[in-house]
Image (tube, rainbow, N blue to C red; front, side, top):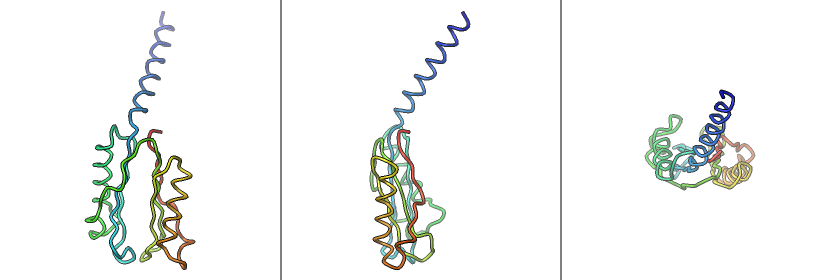
Length: 143
């Protein structure tokens, strides 16, 4: 009797985990981009696996506005870029301080998001710094 009850509990727990995980499928990205990123920096906040787009958006904006490694100028410009479901978000930047290279993307897969974010970073970095862009943050929603 104990074995069958244990199996039932395991199936119930697995089903509960699956439905809980699949219901957390909303994400959002917020960025703060001053006119001069090289001198004023860049801020961003991203959130994944929230219960809905409104929650994800609120969390992403809060994270952007409190980004520790950014400036007040950038944090004050934070705005929601996109709320999404079951997608990946990536941010890429030139790691050298005082450079303008930054890019972000939301795409169906981690690889696509990384590729697009890097391409966007290279455009803003300019010809002398474009090869220094690296992915700094990637997360996938609903996974």
